[in-house]
Each structure stands twice: as structure tokens, then as C-alpha cells.
Image (tube, rainbow, N blue to C red; front, side):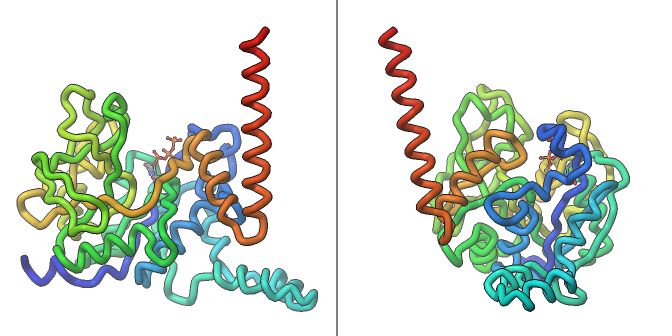
Amino acid sequence: MTDSHTKPVRKAVFPVAGLGTRFLPATKVMPKEMLPINDRPLIQHVFEEAREAGIEEFIFVTGRHKNMLEEHFDFQPELEETLESRGKHDMLEKIRDSEMGAGQLFLTRQPRPLGLGHAIWCAAKLIENEPFAVLLPDVLIQAPKGQGCLKQMVDVYGQNGGNVIAVEDVPKELTFKYGIVDTGGENAPAGSSGMAVKGLVEKPDPEKAPSTMSVIGRYILQPEVFDHLSAFETGAGGEIQLTDAMDKLIGKQPFTAMRFHGKSYDSGSRLGFIEANLAYGSEDDEIGEDVKRVICEMAAKLNKDSMNEAAE
Ligand code: UTP
């Protein structure tokens, strides 16, 4: 392992230039990454996960109609003054916690959404020659307090260096929807030092899938990935895929797949979004108990309705 593959991870890339077509018409003008889960937008959840993992520089790959994302992390003087004058100190704390300090936020544009790999390539000049994290804002990972998914990955990176990707098991019949890892049959639980990756396949048919472990949107990568992304080769779906460029690093650098403690939500899909809101809402200090009560009441009503239907 060379030294350059063990440098600390200080920078994170947040690709936010996609069109969010699964959420239309809600995302016709509003960025998908601004959809709220409980009391904060998706982008703030992943920002907090990155900050907790020790990230110092936050790089947004944005596109048209996405200015709201950078505004969200800016100082809002009128709002702060009003909260201060009304004595709403708890809320003021929350607002201040969502601000980025000077010199922390960096922006680059992806003129056309040509795929995740292309979005990451747009950040190459800002990353320079360092390892970096990538967090997909529409994937939320609810993890034990103080042990966010990226923090767990940074710990594994500290042991192995190189590249680390978070993986989660999916039903075998659904492998065609995900990037799937080949670990040569190795199967290590969360909390271990992970599994050596032998290959990555984008959206394989179930009969060809090398495992059921899917790549879920959290990566620690070495800058050499840009050498492969800059070829602009298109892969599955005609898009420039990050998975294809990562696959080319395997065998040349340490490459680890890590199962994490926690649960992921695909909040870029409508069902995942509702599920994430219920999950995060029910853990909220203020409204959690009420959310649980509402869920139980709805479940009881649905059960009663279906029993009545069956009896008719
Ligand atoms: P998705 O594929 O989930 O986002 O990409 P999307 O394309 O916006 O959504 P749908 O499928 O049309 O509903 C994951 C993340 O990568 C970003 C998206 O903004 C999202 O946060 N992305 C994707 C880019 O920044 N550029 C791209 O070319 C593609």
C-alpha cells in the first residue's frame, strides 16, 4: 500500500445535478435534494453525516435550478435576528447548525446530467490528488447515534486504506436494479474490516449476479478514479457510470466492501421517501411518540378494513 492511498479523507462530493424524474412534478422546479425528511432536507442529512465523519470541505456538483441548495447552507441574517428577538433559541441553534463556515463549501457545475460518473468527474479539479468521499443525497442511512455510515467507512479506511464502498443486501430477484459487488464468496458482517472486492457489475440479471450485496451510495475513493472517468465511456443506461470507473481500480489498489450498522432509505423514490419520513419522524425528540401513535392507528384501521373486506 502506498502512502497516497492512506491520506486522511477531508473532502466529500455531493452530486446534486440530476433531474429527479421519479419525483415529478414535485421536482419540476424544486431540487429533489431539498425534499424534507422530518425537519431537514435530504442534503442536510448527508452533510451532517459527512461532517460527523471528519469531512472539512463539501463539494456540490450542481446544475440548473439548483441554487437553493447552496442558499440552504448560507448565513440568513433576517431569520436569525427574528428568532433571536422572539427568544426562539432552540430554533436559532438548529439554523446555525445548518450553516457552513467560510471556505467550506465549493461548487462545480455539471452542464448536462450525463450520469453519476460524469458528475463526479466534474469535481476532479477541486479534489486534486487526495482521497475523497462521495455521498448520494437521496440515499439516507439511519445509523446508531454518532456512528454514521461514512464514519464507519472512515474507520475501515483507517485499517485498509485505498477505496471503501458501503454495501447492503438486496433480494436476489432485484439485483438488476443495483451495482453489485463480487467478493469471491467472502461474507463479512458489519463492524468487521470488510471484504476485498474482486469485481463490480452494474445492474446484473439475477442469474448472473456475483452476490446480493449492492453498492448503496457511499464511497471513499482514490483520485486515480478520475483517470478512468475522463475516458467518458458510457455504460448501463447510456450513462457515464461511476461503477465502471471504480471497477478499473480493483486489483491495482486496496478495494473494500463494508456492510454497515444501520438501514438505508432510497428517498429519491416515492415509497422510500415516505418510509424515511416515518422512520426519522418516529425517532424525533419532539414528535416521535405522536408519529408512532399515528402509525399504529393507521395500521389498526388498515387491518380492520381488510378483515371487513375479507368477511364481506
Ligand atoms: P439518481 O439517478 O438517483 O438521481 O442519482 P436522478 O437522476 O436525479 O433521479 P431520477 O432517477 O431521475 O428520479 C443519484 C444522485 O446523483 C445525482 C442526482 O442529483 C442524485 O443526487 N446525479 C445523477 C447527478 O448529479 N448527475 C447525473 O448526471 C446523475
